[in-house]
Length: 388
Image 1 (cartoon, one colour):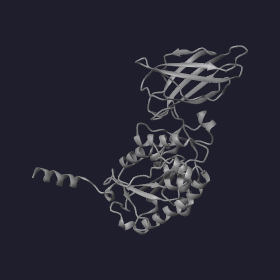
Image 2 (cartoon, helix red, strand yellow):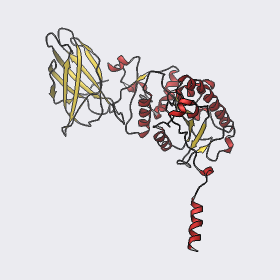
Image 3 (cartoon, rainbow, N blue to C red):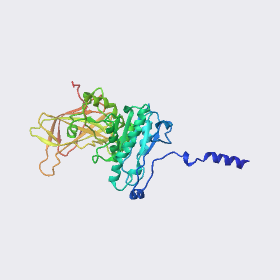
Image 4 (cartoon, rainbow, N blue to C red):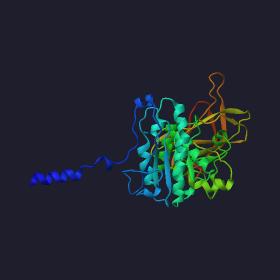
């Protein structure tokens, strides 16, 4: 009797192949060498099925158990897979996106088609994948969805696919996140996007005409963009979308990040007025120290600056940590020349402003001299209030 009961329980616990969760296609280098024929899986995750995807039927939206066309739908589209393995970032992307809100998350698996040693073959498949996605979006629209609720995240060739779909809808798709080909590190860009979902910090971008102007502190007054302020990097950048629509033109925004996850950069504006009679050209390196004795050095490479008598020079600087209270500031002036005399930089006024926390008191120092390649450390004082 006991044996019979055990047998029944065992049978109840075992699942058949048909009941297993659909998974992202896992291939290998052998598949890349032999080549793969394009097949596309649309794997749906929602808060009701976070751990087990539902494979969507391409020509039957209403057959889905979990798809809710009244909710925001996020498509994640991978790129070229030269070894056939699933993207290493896919699990984190799925988990973080599902934690961001009540959404339909559709993983677009075109690994059979992206896995090939011949890159051009994968490129040719992009438009085919885009056509499949358009057909499915059309069905979702017919079932009550709106284009505004559609968001496509494309990595590498996946960005091309998302762009093709957006083009088919004449730019009216809710949002597309992708990277201009050959102009970024695809893996780093993915990790930056994932970092924005973790919300450990807001990596701020500054609308500006050029990167050089941005580094020279010409575009860091976010108050001019009120009520939207400056945009932040990544998933929540769409909070700034209405401002872009208002301008009705493409907007470039620049930022710097630290080397490691979560890639936060805390920005400061260094504002210096010099009184040398002769023009000086060079670089300023800055360190800050808190009251516990912790010291950090700016991670941004400064632009070469031209210092003239009684002229203000602004430069953007940033740190991987944020000190709420700064006890000391260290500055080093350098011309980065190996030969010739060493110069002095005579400072009439120095002002340091925390851009990420503009409500903090600005810090000042007056009337001091920087000897070239010699670090000067001093205790700053609060700046007097002044009109903007």
